[in-house]
Length: 203
Image (cartoon, rainbow, N blue to C red; front, side, top):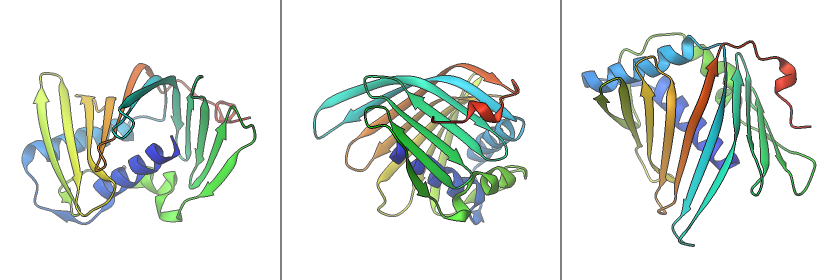
């Protein structure tokens, strides 16, 4: 789960905050839809299903849990047993708790990867595509499917986001170069419900 969260933060930061270049209209409209959805969301809670397809072991691990975030700096994800774990991100401080071990591991991300900076950038409209990634988008009725393909030889080959025309994400697919695939599906999504700081704890 820690790896998945770091990958998503890296991709989203590169996509929404990097240098810009000329865009095709579909990709630009899709990214602006996503950005606007985040900008209008003060907090969010949802159920999550994670499918981890491991190419080397030729098996799939399925976990269910919950996810929450609250501006300006709080993100929480918990996966239930049998692969239980908790992750809390407070700006750039990440805390990971594994149910079978107890306690929590702390990881400090670089300040430029903190949630406060990310959310601040989402306040400005997307007017061009970032450098360092290719972005393609298709519209299917009320849904957008956005493909983000990082340049270079990093571990991520492609991230695919599915969202509605309000920018609400319902599915994230992360394809890695080693053949592994992680699918995150969100359901029972509730936004701007007034989450409290007590909702963000791994104790």
